[in-house]
Image (tube, rainbow, N blue to C red; front, side, top):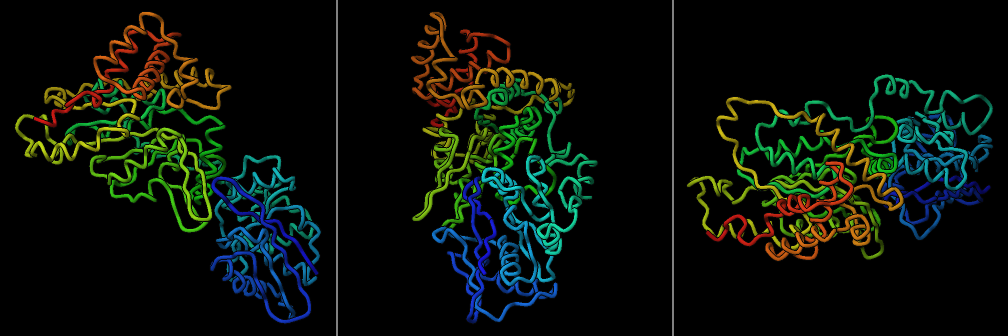
Length: 525
C-alpha cells in the first residue's frame, strides 16, 4: 500500500514541500531513496526503535521510502516523524484519516519522544501557501508559529500525540500550541525571543562627553546608516556601539517577519514565542572567518552568516583594523546590495543582509596615534594598518567619526547627558517619517535608498546645489560618496522635522566623511 506524507525542507529562508512516499510490497528489506544525507539514512534505525517502543511491528516485507523530489538533497533528522507515520499507515496498523491534512516534521527519540527541528516558522508558512489545514511540529518548534492563526498548529511531545491527532477519534484541542502549558507559561512571563537584559545595553547618559559622536550615532540609528568610529582605547567606541542598540525602534511587522524566518532556519528562535520583536545586535570576534561573516557551507547545506543574522539590526565589528582584509572586502557587496548571494557548484542561495554596520578601530597598531608622544608606531606601520580604512569599503560607510579621549575634568565631574529614551524618541519619529515616505517603495530607511529614490526624495534647490558642488570640489569625493551625503542629509532633515534638505544639513553630512580627505589621520607623518 502506498502512503504519502507531506513534509518540507528549508532552502534559504523559504520552505519547499517534500513528499515522503512509503510503499510496502512483497520482498525483503527497508530501502530509503531520494538524495538523503547520512542523518536522514540513520533515521531508519531511530524510527524502527521508536515504533517498537510503542508496540508497533516492522512488516517482514519490502519497505521503500522515497523522499520526493529526488533531485533535491535532504538533510537533518526532521523526516523521522513523517517516515514513521508512513510505515504505520502503509502497514495498516492504524487508520490515519487526517494524514493528508497536515504538514508533519519532527525528529524521533528512541523512546518515541519528538524533538525540535529547525524552521518551524517556515514550515507553517509553507503549509498555509499550499492549502494544508495545519502543521504538526515539536512543541518548541511550534512556538515559532503562534502568530499563524489561520492554521491549526499542533505542538507535540511524542509520537502518541501525533497519532491522536491523525486518527481523528477524539478532541485534540489541548495539543493546539495556544492551549499548551508551555505557551501559557511563556505568555504570562512576557518572554519574547531575543529579549535583551537591561544590563546589556548602555544608556547614552552613562557615556561621558563625546557629544559629537553621540550626534553621529543618533543620525546613523535614525536612517540606518553605516558607521565607523576611529579612536584610541578607552575613548568610548564600544560603549557607544552598545548604546546604539538601545535607541533603535522596534521592528515593523514586515521586518520582524523576515528576521524571524532567518532565526527560525538557523534554529535560534527557541527561547520564546512568536516573532522576533527586538532588532538583532551581532558582535562577532575580529578573528571570525569569511564563511562565519558572509555565510557558507558544503553542497546544498548553505547557512547564513553574521551579515544575515544582523538583518534589520546592527552588525558591530570591533577591532576593525585587525580583521582579515578578505573579510572586509567581502562586506562590500552586502553593504551595497543589502543581500548576499552564496554560490556553490550545484546550488546558489540568496539571503537578506540589510544591516546597519557599526565598526570601531584604533588609529594605529598601538592605538595611541594623535595622543601626544604615546604612539610608538612608525609611519609605515600606520600606513599598513589604516590601509583597511580606505578605498571602496570606507566609501560605503555613511558616517565616519573621530573620537578622542574624554578630558579628565569631564570624567571627574561626570555630569550626565541626555538619556537614551529621549534620543530613541527622536529616532522613532524620524523612522516613522521614513516609513510613510517609503510605504510604496519596499524599503524602510533612508540608507536603503537607490538612485531612483534619491532623485525623488532628495531634491536640491539652487543654494543646496551650489553648496554640494563646493563640497565635492573641496573634498574630492566620489560619486558614491555624493549619494551617501544626500542620504545622511535627508536623515538629518527628518530628525529636525524639515521637509526639504538645507545647506546646513549637507554641511553636517559632509562633515561625517573625514576619512575621504587626503591624509585625514596624518598617516604619512
